Length: 160
Image (cartoon, rainbow, N blue to C red; front, side, top):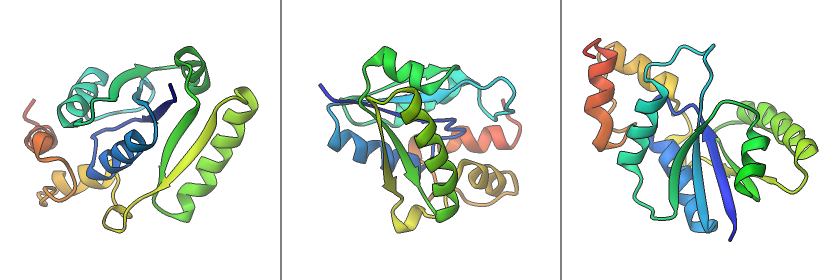
């Protein structure tokens, strides 16, 4: 069984994230969406909330959601993953992701990094942009899954 992990903070998950996850699910037998737990990072949603939001959006039976707070390659080894799937929006993403891929490969040579390019309609999309647009009263319905748009709107407006 070919297992891939798809890591990120997913704060919140966007249509761009889901596109990468779904495409990875078509390539690999199993995809584990790994939500990063980074206590030094200020997030809009808690780790548990981010996992729950992703679970509400996942349609593929071969996709599961988990979390990890340490080295990604340690998690990949533990799960027997053969690939780390990363989405790329622009060349600026590639520079950072390429450095990470080389580091991960040196730490866990059995695992490849697979880059999937964002679809044209998602090239500009990021969780930070979604949060900013929403906080300023803009319409985020074309950026995030319908299943969770109200949750994001409420949180951005301070309705916990």
